[in-house]
Image 1 (cartoon, rainbow, N blue to C red):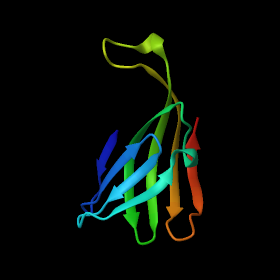
Image 2 (image 1 turned 30 degrees about the vertical axis):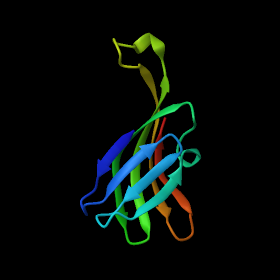
Image 3 (image 1 turned 135 degrees about the horizontal axis):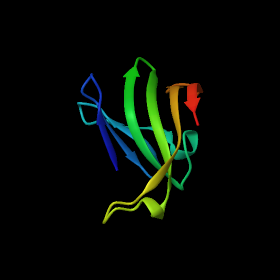
Image 4 (image 1 turned 60 degrees about the vertical axis):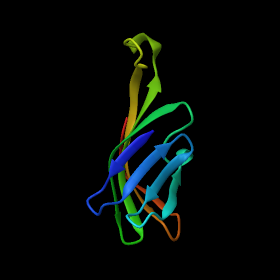
Length: 101
């Protein structure tokens, strides 16, 4: 699970099937599916996410599982890529602003 709080007081939760937003009034919205920024084999970490109007902007880091990097109970991973993207919540159009492999 990934939990992130933005500057507006909204909370975001990243689960295996996507990213969800919980507004300060308790309203839940599914913002994206995992297929839009990674795959089901990736570990995903949200570094930044912010909702502005009808758009969400987020920086997401994806890593692949790597058992050679395990330390005790912590699972190891190797960084795969980072994606900064914008998604329009009305049209579902996704724009990759940049991606680093």
